[in-house]
Amino acid sequence: MRGNDMVSGSLFSYVDLEERVPADHPLRTIRRLVDDALLSLDGVFSSSYSVMGRPSIAPEKLLRALLLQVFYSIRSERQLMEQLNYNLLYRWFVGLGVDDCVWVPTVFSKNRDRLLEGDVASAFLKAILAHGDVQPLLSDEHFSVDGTLIEAWASMKSFRPLDEQDDDQGSDGERGGRNRQRNFHNEKRSNQTHRSSTDEDARLYKKGSGKEAKLCFMGHACMENRHGLIVDAAATLADGHGERNAALHMIEPRADRPKRITLGADKGYDMADFVNELRSMNVVAHVAAKIKHSAIDGRTTCHQTYRISQRIRKRIEEAFGWAKTIGGMAKTKHRGLERVGWQFTFTMAAYNLIRMPKLLGNLP
Image (tube, rainbow, N blue to C red; front, side):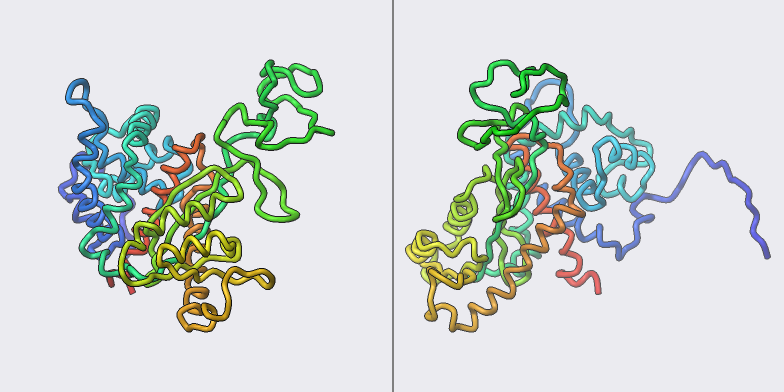
């Protein structure tokens, strides 16, 4: 028979939030890992906050809310607060009760900035990797590294000569407002003579020959080859040596062992100084060999492990693609190297978490 379309109008609910979330929901596994990781960071949080004053947003709840923003591609913190107001799944994951008030977006943003000071994103990534359920999934012998461009939140109009005194005057002599026209004709622009007036850390860089130059940063990630989990991430200024320098910095602590390890990379890393530096650290360079003037030879490329590294290293490109589409790195409004690096590292930690339910056997 046809049901009755009557509105109940009940004021009270006797169903707990814990019972509303299905037992096999992927966020349950992620929530358990996140809670254990945040518990290990209690000392880091305590050093970032004063013992006096008004209570702030709990850093644990703040980080869980930021994870939701990455998982579900929520475009702004204002929209995140709006969804927290009525989405019971989000409230359960963050740790808010049904009757708890949601924070004001500007207050949430200011409390988030406090976490930048303690390098919480890097510590959060390490805490996830150190979890008892995650650690057996990691390889300690085979790694891959790669870099990607992160477009800066700065207009090309802001890229001005260092000796330009009047911020309101363009190169054509016309005065204008914030988005005024600027004539770049016959003006040679470079990172040595120009700097962005809105983001001093942004650098003019192009991905390859024939590509357009953009104001951007470089994001770097190191991946273990067993299950393709990100074990380290960082952001640097965009320059021609950034990728190789970051790779050496990330692989050095993992090479401190008697047995040799391998590091896979693309052709951009096939440079003699980079390969020689890896060999001095007892690391086998499984970089993609260039057709001419390659720094590696048949003694490396003939092995089966080299071919496996070349096949698996492409997984790191999937992580970058996820970060820039679903994870929202391409839409980040953070300026400055420190903020971009924090956001990039945190997004890579979220990428590891989103894969955990399947890796741990909680999903088919």
